Image (cartoon, rainbow, N blue to C red; front, top):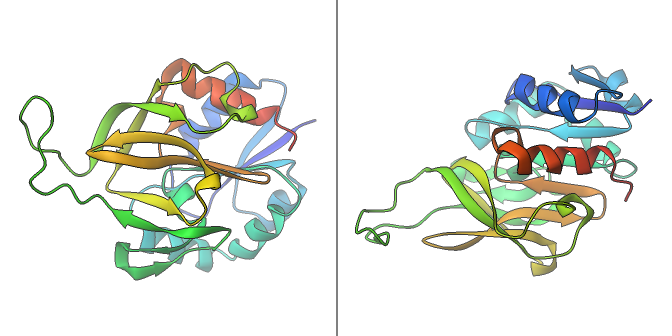
Length: 212
């Protein structure tokens, strides 16, 4: 049986992520857990995150799960979601917070002061709502999802990978930015697949069947 663990370190939209996974993979054993044994026994992991990066990193460290997550990424697929994607990088401008460092790069804040949208209104930070995602690479997690599909975003910060080859998807909000990254058996998104209707469910389904 495919064991999928949504990592519970105290921060994140855990229940809705788990529900989306159960919906697309009723045959899988999907559980929300902060137990080291469950994380080590999992076939694949989902690392969610919501709120401020400093709080998420502190909770991940204090939960004792950080090393288990790092260790797991050497041998099993990992999907990062929202701040769960940002945690994978070296450093975030939000509170000058060091991340896990699994993907080289940093997380920066939108700088949109004075910029106007097409309708003449100012860009708001956080970006909140639906936006198109351009697929920057061919990847199994994009299977069955049309290029430029809409996904749901809520964020003030975004990741800037050091290596452009790690950018799997891009969105434009004031300027183009990386909204999905891929490296080896890691895939991560700034947007929320569980809030993104059919395209988001398809991405979760692809993750369940992905064998990197």
